[in-house]
Picture 1: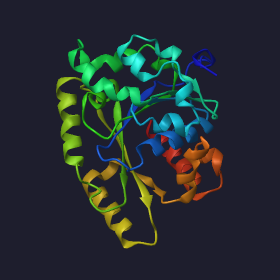
Picture 2 (picture 1 turned 180 degrees about the vertical axis):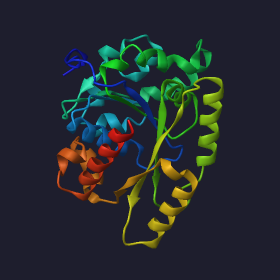
Picture 3 (picture 1 turned 90 degrees about the vertical axis):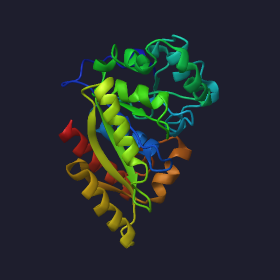
Picture 4 (picture 1 turned 45 degrees about the vertical axis):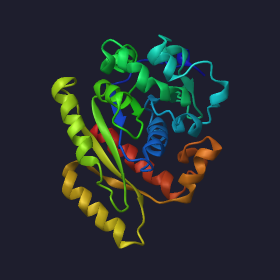
Length: 266
C-alpha cells in the first residue's frame, strides 16, 4: 500500500504536524511515534509518521524492510525524490510511514551547503499535510540540522520523558532551541505535550520524576503515563505496534488512552 491509497477524503479538521523530540536517546521517542500513531489510526485518524532518525526505528518497528527500499527520507531531503514515492503502508491501514535508513546520517553534513537549509522538510510536508489528521516526525537524539528542520516544519512538539534519573537533563537546552526557532524561523511553534514513559508503579523514583516533570512543564504533561511493559519492548521485533501485537496489554491500553488525550488536545 503506497501513497495512492491515502487519498480517501480529507480530514475533518486541520492537520497537526508534531515533532516527537528529546535530545536524550532511549526515552521512547520512536516507541511513542509507532504506538501513538497506531492508536490514533484505530480511532479513525489518518496518520503519517516521518522517520527522521538515521537509526530508522520507526521504519523497522512497522515491519518495513530497509534493505528492500529503493528510496528513503534521505532521497526526499537531498535528491529531490517526491515524498509520494517513498511513503509506505503499515499493518495499521490508516497509518503510513516515510522510512529512513542509515543513509540519512549523511544528511546532517550535506544540508550545511543547501539553500534555505532549515526549511527543506517544511517544503516537503506542506503540499501533502492536508491528506492527514496528524503528521508525526520522529527526530534523532540531537539538536542538529535534521532536528532544526523538524522544528521548522512542525506546529508543535511532543516530548517523551523517561521516569528515570536525570530525566530533565538536557531539556533546558531543548526548550531554548525551540524558543530560538520560534523567534527566528517558526513563530507558531509550541509545546503540544509531554508524555512520561517507562513508568514503574513499584518504585518511588517514577513518582518523584513525574512530580518533578509536572513542576517543570505543568499543564503540558499528559495524564496518561506509559508503563514499563515487556510487551512494548517485544512488539518492534515483530514489526507491529503494541496495539496489534498485544492488544490487551497494559502498554496497548495506555497508548489507547494517550490517543484519546491527543485527540482532545488536537
